[in-house]
Length: 74
Image (tube, rainbow, N blue to C red; front, side, top):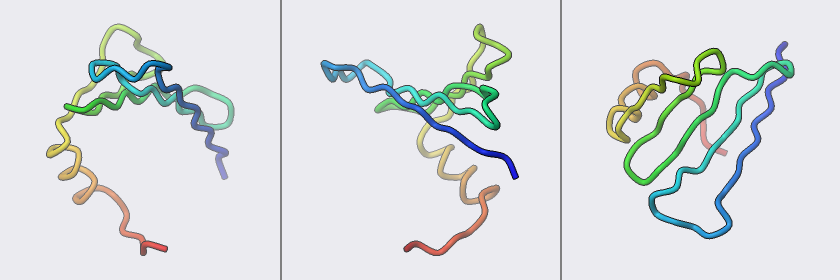
C-alpha cells in the first residue's frame, strides 16, 4: 500500500490573497501541490509547473460528491 505524505505552509502574515499550499507525495514521490484560497482550489501537478487546474468551491463539492468514496464521520 502506498505511503502518503502531506506537508503544508501557511504564510506568516495571513493575507487574504495568499494561498495555503499543500505538497502531496506518494511513496516519497511528489504528486503535486494543492493550493487553497478563499475563492477556489487549485492543483499543480508535479510534472507540470506551468499549468494548474482550478475549481470553484461549488465545483469541488460536486466532484467530491460524485467521484469521492463515502465514509462515516467519526
